[in-house]
Image (cartoon, rainbow, N blue to C red; front, side, top):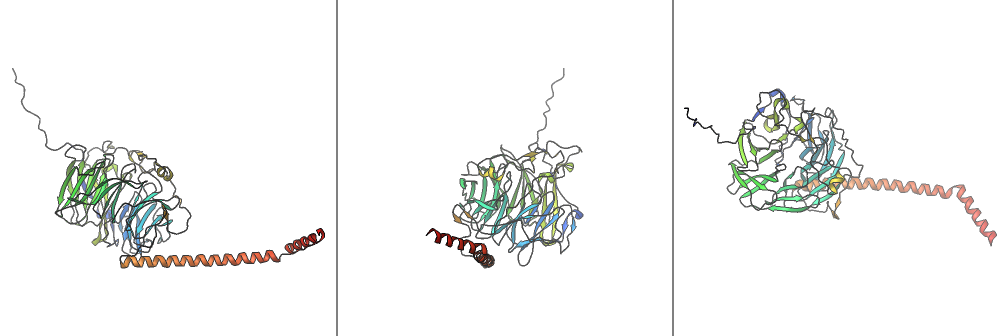
Length: 496
């Protein structure tokens, strides 16, 4: 009689995960971009934006702000005289591609304006100085811009005047103003459908806001964790923040979006001082943490059950990163099982280095399990629909069926005069005293421009008045008028 085997199957202590062996792969030197004078500005932004057509990088420039736009397949050394987008009067602080139109990019600057540019297919042949839209509404420099994730033609901008403006680009005007912050806004993040906005602020508070009403739904002021950056974790109803502990170590915290009284968990990362940039991939539930000024990218898997954050691995590089651009999902190489791609800015070398995060798979076929349906290139709502209160999730697409599907959306800029806006009865360009020499210069240039515009208007009105006076004289002196007058006087005489 044989005895039953007492051998038990070995159970690993870690959770089984298809992303446990994801690794970072740096592009070969011939697939990098070199010779780009990356901006030395110390503002805590990425200074980089990428889509499946173009790579845009903010550059060093004298007498105004500029950025280069390079076709994403045009690798190698970039000519020092390569054409730039250079219409701003101050340093460019943030750039973002329109998620529904590959040729449209928004930029914001220290000159307190937001501008919308249209880049021709194939890239620039000469410097682009004329934007399709100039948006003036902030009284101080504009540090952040974000496109609405599901709506066409809605752009959010956050300025050093502590205000967030919601722009309807179909009319080229600000339609809402969110005025609940008491200091500089550091970060903005939307939930998947764009019905909620999370912000981190220099006043050390984390807020969840209903953007159309500007109402603050939740607010956290947690003493042990000073929030720098915030990101919504897809549809999990969770937020993740990066920040600094009371002992000045870098840490992350996970929050329930409906209760910010206490974080669900906090985790110390390391003792380095650079800002931690969080990136979240809702399709794989992976979180990437990239340190500014170091070359590390840590990545985790996020779950709704404990331990919530599962550390996977760390990509290390000796070259420090100034910022990172992220390729949208429909621009990834699905044949290579690529699930995320960074474009890393290495300032000292003037180098942009693509880093692919790859799931090692032997099979050559399309991997359905790591590429679920993902937000595509079509908006779910028009600007008017969203402003009227409608919420709708993103229009999903499969990456299997020719994911470089051409977009039929056409961007039409409204014809409008360049002027300040009035929202909720408040003049957004009210006279706010400048705090720095830079702001004083910006105000001076803006006033000079306004004076020029008013002088032009006066000249045009003078010309119009002269023309009208001449027309009036011509009418008075015309023979028909004098004959009519004579006839009227004779008829009046006969009636008497």
